[in-house]
Length: 415
Image 1 (cartoon, helix red, strand yellow):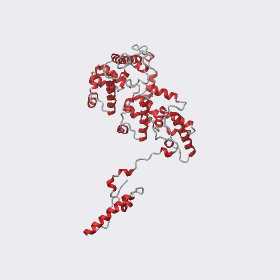
Image 2 (cartoon, rainbow, N blue to C red; image 1 turned 30 degrees about the vertical axis):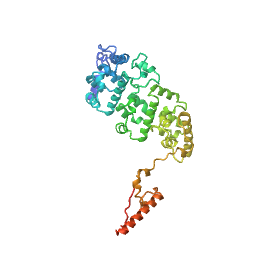
Image 3 (cartoon, helix red, strand yellow; image 1 turned 60 degrees about the horizontal axis):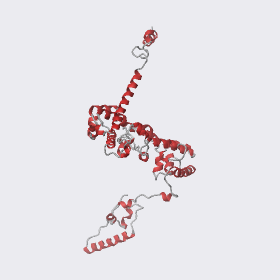
């Protein structure tokens, strides 16, 4: 009378009520009557992280050099401050027993002993090791020491320092998650988030990325996007990699035209909408336009932003509005000063004629002008000197009886 599905439904419907009491979850089971299993796991994790923080803070208070750190402290540093994945941390726990061993590892040994095959992951670890070795060495500058004489400070003490003394990134406040989830979208480059996150790119690595790595592993092929990234990094360097200073300046410039250098891509969109060009503002999203590009790149002008906004050339009214408001933006929010007139801002590129050597110019005569580019010019003095030389050669040939070739040899140039 019934199929398999109907039988299954009937079976569920007539289940013993005594068995239902303990089956939905482990909440009513005698093993976990209060459902504390999940809470216990979170508590254990917090307890382990607290112990790791205590290990690091104890090493900081004692002023120990990185080479003097023991294995558990190095593992805690690798996990909490560097932000390496769990499988790298496990390999380090098994193979690296002290800070001296970690600091002595070469790039090949990092790949073999810890199993880090990704070159950007190795770069991340090497830069972190170099920073720790330099900051915890006895010869570290006094500006990084506390009044007690210790080279290192705790995380709480680090947060209370001013931007003038906060010159290190060791606590991992600007890790790869911050770069991927916050910093790249603020530059208008959220499309590269997954590539930067996979490569574990943190703020410490940004200034060490090469063009080959950007194009290859991080898939940033667009040259304008690389320029945008460069000025974003330059902004961080100007602010001494102070995350709190960056956030406070951005918050203070949300409703005012000031500190354009820290403006995000979203703030640029709001500015374009405020000047009456709302219909074009959506084109700035994921374009790589941000405040540091405008404030620090002297070659970026209103024509560039009009091109990115995709304002038609025939829409002269919108372009005039943009030009006027852009000049106001530069005057009020940046240190750039745009001169009057386009001719003063124009800089001629190096001439391609300079690529030719002087001895190559000797072979250029008036007979070869037809094979040269239309813009190529040869001075009258060079032509006269060359014609005198030709007449002399012709006289010598006629005196020696050597027949003259009907077709002279022509030297061609390509520009």
